[in-house]
Amino acid sequence: MFQLEWDDVRDAGLNEVWEDDASSFPVLQALVDEGVCTFSEPVRAEIHARRLVDMLEVDGWIATSVRLGCSRCLADFSRQLHAVFRLTFTRELPVIADVGEETDEEGVELTPDELGLIHVEGEQIDLRSLLAEQIVLELPAKPLCRHDCAGLCPHCGRDLNAGRCSCEAPVFNNRFAALKDLKIPSADEDD
Image (tube, rainbow, N blue to C red; front, top):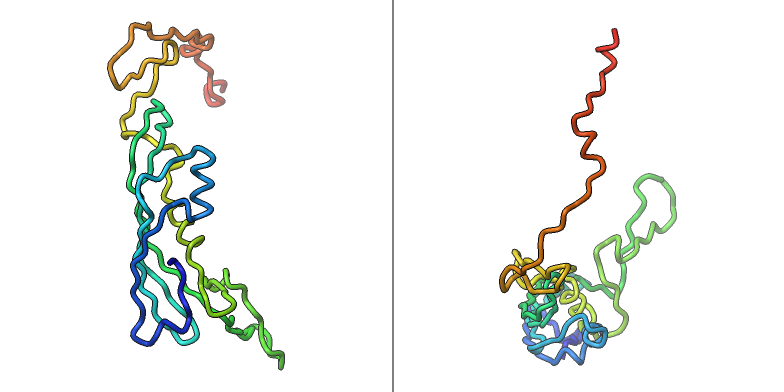
């Protein structure tokens, strides 16, 4: 699962549906080990692979469900993650001639990243780490249980989503409040 054999992709293309536990993805298991999230469903993916001359284009989607801790109120909540991807693989990088110079040299070799290609060696393409990366990119940087989460009271720690607490609103000592009425003459007024 989550691997393609180069020669299995014929002219008609190849369609696959895969499902596996998140623990079989080292990157996703590391997130669980670090306490970032837990996976409440298996990782599912559907891919469509097709040949493009000497390249393989693989597109599809990957999805799973995770449990996260809210960054404001600390409550656990579930979130569905779904990512759409398109990846292009090549075994040999094309050589593109440098148009700016008239030389008899063979040309300039560009890196796979510059071409938007993923260089692979051999007959097998392991998609496991590339697809796990798509899941990681879907994880929110600051997870919220809901967009209007009120968080916790900074004094008593009560969950403000459940209702207000009896703490008084803090009074801020704004020492610069006296400056709000200060008028500074402009350069034009001095003349």
